[in-house]
Amino acid sequence: MHERMNFPIVPTPAPKELIPENKKEYTRLSITSKVEKSNGEFEAFSIKLDKNGKPPLIVFEDIDKTLLHLEPTYNEIRKAMWPKAVEMDGLEEVSRVHLAGFRLGTMWRELYRMYAIYELEPRRTEWKDADRYEKEFLAEGMPGEHYR
Image (tube, rainbow, N blue to C red; front, top):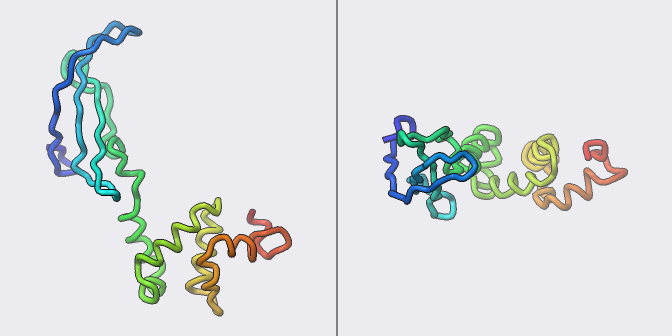
């Protein structure tokens, strides 16, 4: 059992293979993560084991791509950063609005947009549409143009 993640790693036997470039014999170990992804699937990956049955190097925190899916972490951050927004629109809507701003290119653009939508008076709720925010604030000749 992996100590930090509290789930068993169940090896699946795989055939030995000969790696031509270094002439070392390896055994492959196939592992299916017990951490479910947002789409309900479980990441499967394969690890080479040396002749002593040990992997050359493993980074467990990212091997099953759990660090690439940060929605649970972001949800906690959203609740802490924008409690009024979550109260007004609900976490699902605030998440949708926040994620729509990820493509804007910088964290400043993303966070200022959220501030304008949920905190600024008067609120700029029309900027929930990230394209509109770009046209009305970030475009050439607009107040945020130098943040492009």
